[in-house]
Image 1 (spheres, rainbow, N blue to C red):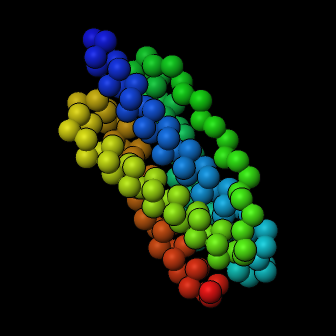
Image 2: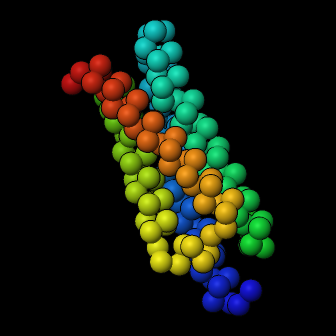
Length: 152
């Protein structure tokens, strides 16, 4: 692999890692919200948002690791999400999580829209990002519906 190609692939990997970390922050926000809900609402949050988000986050982590390995690049360190900042309530925690999800999705779109993406990516990475983005769409929809219930 030419040095320029290696550098481009390293940049792609770093961008993927950054969006994966955003998903980790969203997971932390939703987990914190879960702890403040009644059983019925917590169950809906878990099924509609938390579990699919955890799966998307896990898939993104795996995609980062697999891409690094397939390209002979060093594994990036994915930082653990810090504890969420204090929030005024569950609605704010979920809103923060949705903000992170939206930013991660936009970041993934930017990666996929880059003119070098087809050349730098491989079929497993393209499939993984498709899975992650599909899961995020469902998470965003579920999160928006839950926020409506929490009121203002």
